[in-house]
Image (cartoon, rainbow, N blue to C red):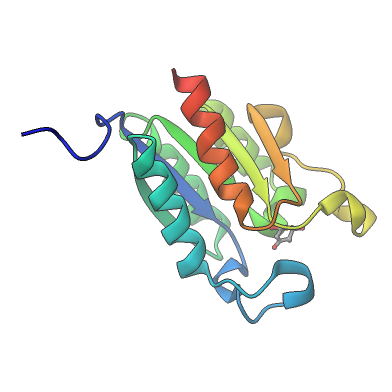
Amino acid sequence: MTPSTAPHRGALLILNGPNLNLLGTREPGIYGTATLADVEQLTEAAAETAGFTATCLQSNHEGALVDAIHAARGTAVGIIINAGAYTHTSVALRDAIAAVELPAVEVHISNVHQREEFRHHSYLSAVCQTVIVGAGIHGYELAVSALDKSLG
Ligand code: DHK
């Protein structure tokens, strides 16, 4: 029988940080009305189409995000991360991404460069292969596409 999906290329870890559990009701003028479940569904679908599986995790806790990145080593082939506000504060997340040596894509739903000055700097960008901002939740699909290409 012909397989109905692309060959399995491994797992992508999809990480969402603080306050992203509130998507759908949180500042909809900035973040839109889609929920975290919607984001995870569309990312899983994009991953599956590209031949990956997706493991989704959201946490409001920095250490839980660090632990998830550590656990990705050996279990995932790439990481997509919207670290929320930790993007602008967390050396720990930056060091975790660097430590596991997996290709990572940083996503922000909003265009952080059009927003407050404190959102313009990211501790993560320098250790991520790709940065996607301002594409709304479509940014997560673009992130899958970026990993699809780079992982060959
Ligand atoms: C999400 C957040 O929670 C903010 O703290 C970031 C990002 C922007 C986003 O656009 O997805 O500054």
